[in-house]
Amino acid sequence: MLDRDACLALDADDPLRGFRDEFVVPEGEIYLVGNSLGALPRRTAERVRAAVEDEWGRELVGGWNSAGWYDQPLTTGDRLAPLIGAGPGTVVVGNTTSIAVYQAVNAAVRLRPERRVIVLDRANFPTDNYMVQALPGYEVRDFAEGRFDDAAAVLLSEVDYRTGARHDVDAVTAEVRAAGAMMIWDVCHSVGALQVDVSAADFAVGCTYKYLNGGPGAPAFLYVNPRHQGEAVNVLSGWYSHAEPFAFEGDFRPADGIRRFTVSTPHVLSFAALEAALDVWERVDLAQVRAKSMALTSLFIELVGDRLELASPAEAERRGSQVSFYHPDGYPVMRALIDHGVHGDFRAPDILRFGFAPLYTRYADVHAAAEIVAEVLGKDLWRDPKYAQRLAVT
Ligand SMILES: *Cc1c(COP(=O)(O)O)cnc(C)c1O
Image (cartoon, rainbow, N blue to C red):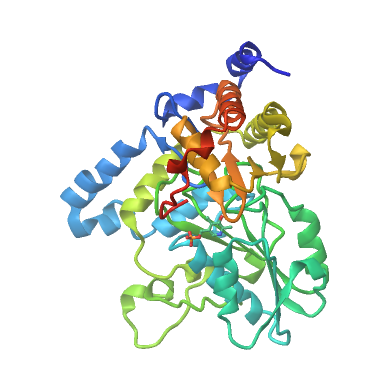
């Protein structure tokens, strides 16, 4: 078992060690929630200040042209595309993941008009399933049934938000497409954590505020495979997706290419923060991120040992970048851990989640976190009644 000195040695040898200084990580706290809200990149404050004072303040409405605001959904999409294995002109940024799910599923089922089944995983993040359950005229089937031959579309998360279990994207995509169904991946919990490649899929969606560090409320993204771009319909046909938005025509005509999947005015100030985060990602080797992520999660599992029951796959290849454990009193345990400086989160009914963002989490942090877990559990510190009181956001 690795001791603290061995962890410090791993940190000294880490090819990603230089990135930690590019983030604001509170001193003395171990932040293992980068899978929910990524840490603040140091360069973000200046980029947002520039967007507010230099662009909005000085250019005013001219910023739509001079500062490139108008094309932000597309230019940012092209910058993000390499992080999901996609090429230029295939990704649009804006709105939220839920909205992108709605666009992707509606476009997918219209490409298979003779089929009336949508396959969902019970393990999907609830919003993905909620958005689809609202679609009239479709039967919903559970992915576990493994039948796709009459399905219009299959919507899955690459990495399970609760357990961190990872699907084999290539294998599932091939099976679903061979059955004639459209494959839609949600990569919220994998983008920025591993080498995502959705290029064989029909559609993909994801958010940018988790491992990508785009900031609270950062815009989401939608990937549309080029093979569908001529035919696929955007059900949220706002003025931005019109062939000539500034012709202000009375009737809708869709734009060509990925612009068709924009909806309306981009959230310019949120894009500024995301752009600063992408300045960091442009210099990151995702193979190094994945290697470190597997090492950090494996180390945490090893150091926590049998103090907690593992809810994540034991094999690193089959996990994303988080480790989850079951505990019947998960809520007070997590509150106690946070009070002692280890920030994870709790997912009802009984899951403790710890996310390991490889750009700013060190091996020594993992070691210290495991020691605090041992203390909080070993000394029953979590039984203090003050930890039982529920906060609004867990
Ligand atoms: C975080 C997350 C979302 C969030 O959806 P929003 O519309 O951005 O609130 C959706 N799906 C998955 C899988 C997620 O992990």
